[in-house]
Length: 191
Image (cartoon, rainbow, N blue to C red; front, side, top):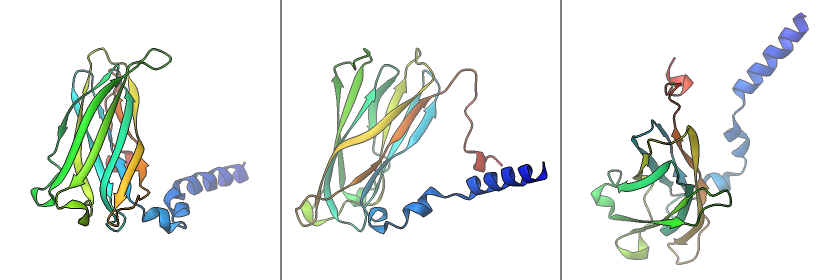
């Protein structure tokens, strides 16, 4: 019985100490690659949430970037772009065009956001690292508790040399909370 407890305790400690990014760090090329990062936000029905869009430049090699984000839009409606993340000195231009798409095979409506990012001064300046914009989404009153995936795709980037650059992407989520359960922050920050 004591051996089982020790084994279980060892497995729990191993699981808690496992760091997936540590195993990923052997491929330092991917860690230094330019990356689009969409945040994760949660909100109640009938409210508006702001999804942050970040960029990690990977050494300042990207001068122009375009990508799309497609999502199920029956409960989550794109509202507007909030450019409060942009500092005026960056001269960053983020153009976002929403487009309603035909419903999925199961009949759910879809929306696509076409996002183009550039910086004034031409192709000689790299796109800045950090928070670029917030994408505001309205959560409908009829929304069911659900996590809507926000996956960037169709990524096209031009480098300072004028050649295409590979850019990675991290998906975000817009979470419609349940009426039965209150929103709870990260476990580690609540203790």
